[in-house]
Length: 208
Image (cartoon, rainbow, N blue to C red; front, side, top):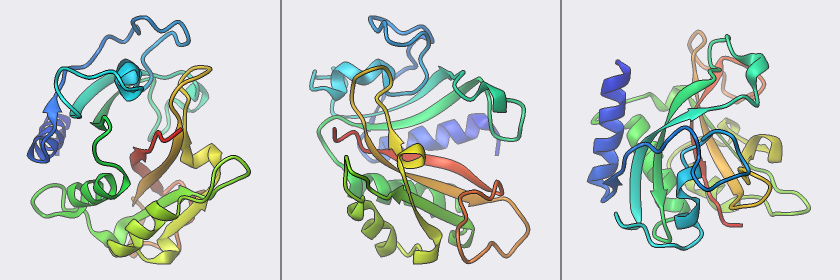
């Protein structure tokens, strides 16, 4: 599958879930002195994530151009780039964890969309710490969808917490999805330190 087809499928999928397609914002953020570049799809949407009404509605989807330098030492391997396009679906005070996780799973595994085999997928959720609790809700949604317990890793903030993008702003736990690119069968237990598990999706829940 080529990148153009992947973009089209992603936007078509979320249009079918009632999302309005919006364009990519500039790589140079507007009215945000905390960052030099747009590093994530949420940057241009911060005012709307904080409560301002978006003219296109409460459900949005886009393909945002991004530049990141935080992991520049890793650029050049199989998975790290400085410039990339982030596919995003956004809920502005509408749906939350259940729908986000169900739709991620549907797009990845349904034969109508990408049709990836469940046997090659694993996920991670926020383990909790002194500041915020274990993300039990996300964990239970993955179990209900059929992801076996050994394929769900509970990880700390370094892996499963997003934001804030600058010094302040929205932040919260996330749940990540991984695809096994090594020889089959994939290991029964998910080891997030094994580079053959490649992250392919990240649902961020900016509840703080």
